[in-house]
Amino acid sequence: GGDPVLLHPSFTLGVFISSAVVVGQPHRRVRRRAVRSATVHTAAVSDTVEEMDLPTPHATSNGGRMTNNKKGMEMSTTSPLFDEWVQAFDGIHPLVDIGCAWGKNVFEAAKVLAKTRGPPAATAVRVMACDCDEAHLAYTRAHAPPDVATAFARVPDAPAVTASSILIGEVLHFVEGHAIDKTLAWAHDALVPGGVLCLTAGTPWAKFVPGASGMCPIQAVAQSLWEANQGKDWPGSQGVNHQELMAGASLFNMPNDQLPTYLHPIAAEDLSRACERAGFEVLLKREQIHPGWPPASANNGRENAQVVARKVVRA
Image (cartoon, rainbow, N blue to C red; front, side):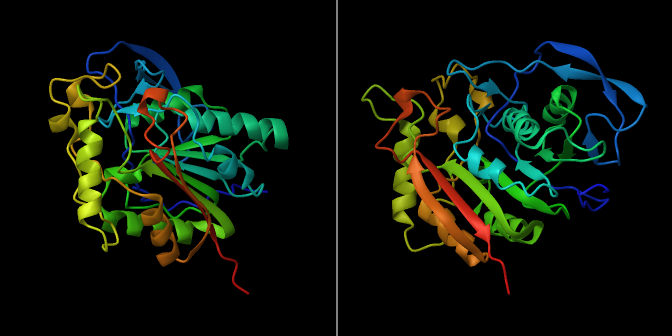
């Protein structure tokens, strides 16, 4: 009985995600139910309804969707760690998605839980969608079932939430190393004992678009940066500017100002070491292409860092 989600009233966590929405795109009016508090929104909480604008996400040429925060796109598929994230649900504490974009992982998680766990209790929140862009959150609320809550979030600041499992997919490469360390410390505190953390991020070997020579200008710079700073906790923390490197070129039909001005190339070993520093037990560490990227972006199977870590149960 009761709401299993524990949130501080001044919740202000924020997230950068890989996505964006073109300025001036069509909007439609939607009716939104009011919220449980000033910062946590559910799809159906009270009888109060207000009007708001809801943007229409624009598709990219690879099947993703541009997002509203000038960070690229939402992936065309669910996370490669989707199963690990959802299977860790303990039946009480919510799954949390940090950087939910237009809600692809959130909606699929709610569907899986409905199928495997049955309908939720009337006031239960089983999935929490967090993002730094209000348009993404509004879209998620408008399309989500009642057991999905949304909250504005900006890493590395964090909410006082107790979670079964946390997904931070394609987010951490938008912040510097010290902010990642702070985010991982928050995740360790937020998870229940035995709870699972699922992380994905772009590596120094991620190939975005080949140039005339067949080489990707972004990948070449990212790899050089990472290799030149070996021995540091975060070798790629200086970051690379995608807008500058892609000037005059198009990435999945996105305008140049849709691309990030800072991207931190992160290897799986970087994430794994950081998780261990934060007190996690690493269960999985690998690099492979993200299924949401087109085959042309493949580069020796090291394009996407993927780590699953568990909060150790203390006796």
